Image (cartoon, rainbow, N blue to C red; front, side, top):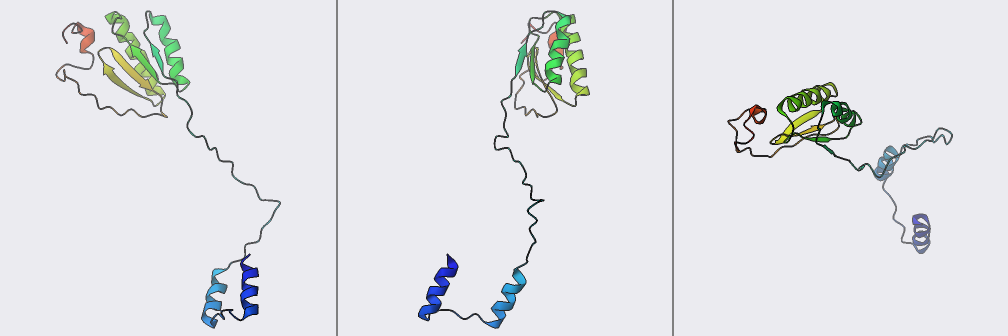
Amino acid sequence: MAKIVDKVLGFMGFEEVPDEEEKRYEEQQVEEVPINRNNRKGAVVSLHTQRQVHVVVVEPGTYDEVQGIADHLKNRRPVIVNLENAEVDLAKRVVDFMSGTTYALNGSMQKVGNGIFLFVPNNMDITAEIKDQNKDKGFLSWMRGDREAK
């Protein structure tokens, strides 16, 4: 389209004559790149990079359920484990097993409440802004019988 307009303007006498300096500059700027149409392969780009994440919430009643919980983590699904109503021995074993699984998978874990833990795979990060009112109590203090003392 620009060539047609230039021809019309040139026919009417309005053509702009470029300086020699401009011609040299334009020649330096233009590089011819040979196009080999046989090797022309475009990159495939996904427009929908976000996929839906399913968070698994579990409340184990027996130790036999822990392997199934760990399988969710292996399949790259975040898991929330609620141990508020679990027995102390069971809760300790579940946390130990899930902590080991999370470590082996380069994931992360975070205590989000009294007896509630979040375990995530390595493709996710946890950002915690929880203000714990009982900072003087330890990580597993709720397991030692301090559950009732809030």
